[in-house]
Amino acid sequence: MPEAVWRRHRTIIIHPGPEGDRGPSALDWAIMDAEPAWGVTARQATGDLDGGPVWGTRVFRMPSEPPRKSTLYNTEVSDAAMSLLAEVVAKAEAPGFTPRRQDRRAVTVRPLARQADRAFSWGDPTARILRRIRAADGHPGVHTELAGMPVAVFDAHPGEASAGEPGTIAARGRGAVLVRTGDGALWIGQARRLAPEAPGTTVKLPAVLALGDRVREVPVAAVPPGLREIGYRRVGRVGWLQFAFANGAMSTGQCRRLAAAVRHAAAQDTAVLDLAGGEVFANGIHLGVIDAHPDPAAEAWRNIIAIDDLCREIIGCIGQVVVAALAGDAGAGGVMPALGADEVIARDGVLLNPHYRRMGLYGSGYWTYLLPRRAGEDQARRLTTGCEPIAAAEAAELGIVDRLVGGDRAEFAGTVLDHATALTADAAALVRRKQAARDADEQRRPLETYRVRELAEMSQDIFDDRHGFAGARRAFLTGRAPGPAPEPEPPVLPVPRLPGMTPVG
Image (cartoon, rainbow, N blue to C red):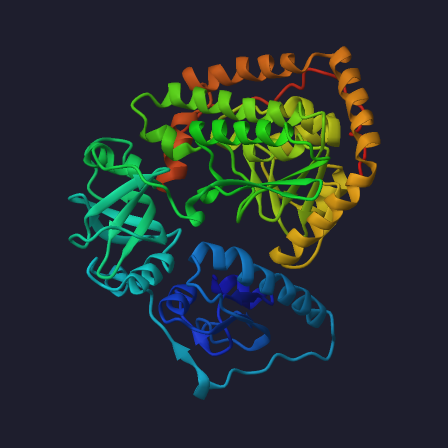
């Protein structure tokens, strides 16, 4: 925090650690050291890093199983931080409030966690390796070697393997590899090459894709539940379709599998279908898989077609009431599968980024139908050109979100299921109204024409690279600034404003 800022403006920093914890790698050390409880602290910015007066703190129990750092940040830490922010704002408005000084006797200063601190041997116990990898997930990963290739590894899950040399790969499945350890095995879902053999291979990828031909002959095996990206279960007359993709990115294959799962769910004799994402609801196409492909443009096109097909399955599910449950954030093409549902329920505090322009793309997923239908043409244009995230509360004001729910993720899932169960009582009438609305929209303009218009624009963005998609993609994946790209033109919505979505709750 620049001194010019905190000296001029009272500035509060939310530190992801309990009172007394200081240092830049708070969550990394908490996971590696198996802390039983952790917290967040609001401190006033001063010239002393993490040493300013305390405005408030929150403490929570750590999960019994080692959490992924990104998951811990997006769940317990974020929930505690949002609660603490409300307290800080209230105190800032209180004339008599004075923050208290830290107790220097209770301070623990931890250094930046470096690769040497994270290091492990594949001959170590599984639990130790798992804790180290999860403490570096999703950034920066832990450096090691797989199949003779230096890599950074992510997304680890316990597994079982036959006896063999620690560090050797016993199996592969769903893009992951099963690596033998000193007393068992770990599935590694994601990897990043550290010694690139060709351009486009230095980004985080499904481990099988990152290792390429080195694991081609490895046998295929079933993966554990933690690596199963899609699952379906029935609860009475409610179908619950759960999907969780790493970082919310959906490759061509993942989109196709999820579309098939939606078709399966739609064919059941349930009344309501819940679409529930994971830590992140969805973030659209998988830029890493696209960039690593020998023909990135062709793979980007296939990915766009696959996500369009997924959205069409959701919009076309007219035999059930469809509810999209956003427990986590959604971005770009990952917003549109949710907007294709009849009702969107979001956990208060999640963010939506319903735009594509910063990536040099016009956008797809039937957004020219879905966004204006909910928010109107003007707001749809603002959201897709302004390129700013919106909180769930603002999305609710715009009509993009139908219902806000407070509480943590477990409470959110229970609330959504209770609401979906309540909807089953009126499901027949709601489905009839949905069918009538869909028929009216189809008469006004066939759904497929929105797709045709969007894909015509996207073809120029992908194959002609008219707005710098290739450079923006590489910059996003590598963290390096892209070269200059043409300024994208504001999108032209091809139709007048459509009637609002039929309410279902």
